[in-house]
Length: 98
Image 1 (tube, rainbow, N blue to C red):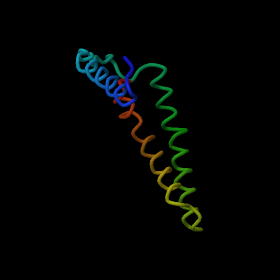
Image 2 (spheres, rainbow, N blue to C red; image 1 turned 180 degrees about the vertical axis):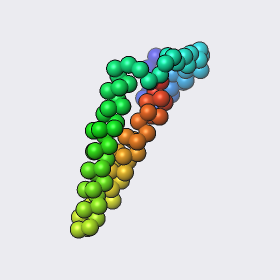
Image 3 (cartoon, one colour; image 1 turned 90 degrees about the vertical axis):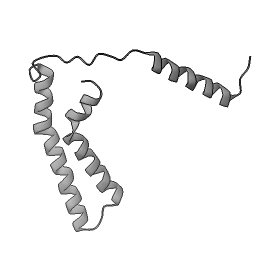
């Protein structure tokens, strides 16, 4: 049986939706202690030293660019978006289960 592309996509989508609905809920177990470990300490060091400096440099660059009127809205939006992502990195990682 040969399916046209639209029918093939619909069949794959319906099988995927059915598989997702039939899968059991995953356990949301957390490791106790939260805050110890090499990865946590490296992440905290990066967020406090490197990431904070990068955000500050981006803000200063946008301020200078606005002062001489050389930046576009896209550049400002990318600096703001990057700063928001870095500021909320823990929350975003939590959404992915880390």
